[in-house]
Amino acid sequence: MILFEEYLKDNLVLLDGAMGSLIYEKGVFIDKCYDELNLSRPDLIGSIHEEYVRAGARVIETNTYGANRFKLKSHNLLDQMEEINRKGVELARGAAGEEVYVAGSMGPSGLEIEPWGDTTLEEVFEGYAEQSGILSQAGVDLFILETFQDIREMEQAIKAIKSVSELPVVAMMTVGEDGKTRYGVDLDDIIFRLDRSEASVIGLNCTVGPKSMLDFMDQIAGISSKPVSIMPNAGRPQYTDGRMIYMSTPEYFSVYTKRFIDRGVRVLGGCCGTTPDHIGKMANALAMKQTRIQHSINIGLKPVTEEPLPDPVPVAEKSKLSEKIVSGKQVVLVEMVPPRSTDITKPLEGARLLMEHRVDAINIPDGPRATARMTGLALAVLLQNQVEIETVLHYTCRDRNLLGMQSDLLGATAMGIRNILAITGDPPMIGDYPQATAVFDIDSIGLVHLINNLNHGIDVGEKRIGDPTSFFTGVGVDPNSVNPENELHRLQLKKEAGAEYIITQPVFDVDSLERFLEKADMGSLSLIAGIWPLVSLRNAEFMKNEVPGVYVPDEVISRIARYDTKDDQLKAGIEIAQGMINRVAGFVHGIQVSAPFGKYTLAVEVAGAILDSK
Image 1 (cartoon, one colour):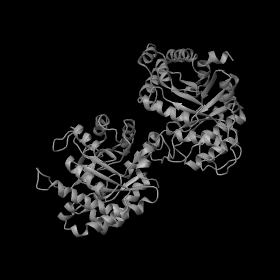
Image 2: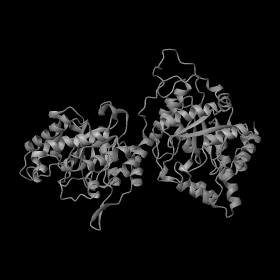
Image 3: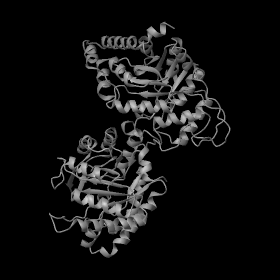
Image 4: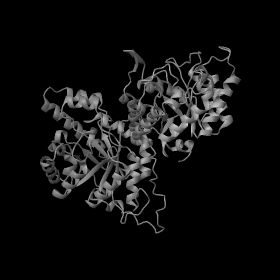
């Protein structure tokens, strides 16, 4: 396993969640010394570590938050300090295995330091040097200093660790919703001083929930360029039936995980009230945002044998679709959502209609909105074999691990699939079965890397596969993203990974698409614009307010709202879509039209101008 600081350079990092509140939930009352449970209840502590590892934590913390001389003395456990700390490392290491890092957790002394109390800074330094020395010798990979309220104590703790170890330090202070410690020191001063320290990662934990933490991020990023760590509480606790209950749900944490990453947070976890369920949801969200995969899928790597790799199939020869695009012809794709049953009567009828009207390919989503449907691969093969129309198969990372993806792709090649759209996939929480487990071994960028490897004749393990695959590889892009810089960055990574064309999210505002493309480095990427006809005012309002990645301007809503009947609203929706096609025709390589509610005649009508010119 590489050193933690090296891992952090290329990866987002997920820490574990709460230890103390989880111990309390499991029936251990707060009059106990929770650090001593390393000795008296190792089964309990070990099981909590294991739960967090299974949830997806990449770093777990030792149960040594209060195992310093100051707090253990108050429990008459000072003579067991070394044993408690060493056992804490042993239990965490046993759960971590070879893929998870172990962090030595160290909290504040709990004492008032001069001039607020009679404890000196020298005594604080000595106490942390003592504990960190034990943890370092016991074999931790890094240190986490958390929930400190006195910046002077934090500075002494960092210096103490660095006096006995070269391991990286994650230093997190805690502030109230006003951005100040209980000593009145504001966030700007805290971050300025942490930035000057020897801590490798700095940030905040505890006290407040995700929203307040997110509000502080711009302030932190404006002062320090160090990696930032955030570990919020699960909201404000409420006292109910003799227990403290935290109200923020795992799903809420999933949403904020994405927002934290968009704001630049590199290290995330949970504090008081968070559980393995919270960390599991965060792991799924983080996997979707991870822009660099943890697997070596790079075409620059040497294959196992020294023989030269076969030449990849030229783009123009990969499929009928790629040939038309390369030759400069505009293409028309129509979306067909797989059925929720085994009955393919309507899809076959729709495919024959589209074939008759010279549609170039049928675009098949893969479990859109995390719904349970016939697999897109099965439908694509059936359509190609029975109707002889080409397909574009969406393929997501949500439902399959890395090995399963490779197996599917090899099988898809053997069954004649040539056009792929690499998609990360919608999280299960938004779909039919929110309790379903997502995989996300890699995201869409990693998937493009994997396909590119196969197109060069080697698999994920750099072994030869014989003849290379010949996938025409596409990716999605959201020109209306709330974080356009991140969308542009990911598009660049997709292009570098081997993407050859893009299909946009539905376009209802051509001006915003043009502004996005002005900033994008398209290179040789072919552009296919998504065009969705709006069938009614209700449909337009739904698209605007409830479909992620879709922007419907108010003027479009107003234009459809002029009409009272559904027929007139549908006519207006078709005219709007046709107007979009006329505007984008000059700078796109084709369009992808949806067929609302399986009405393929509408898709043909919308694309009529292009289809009639063929």
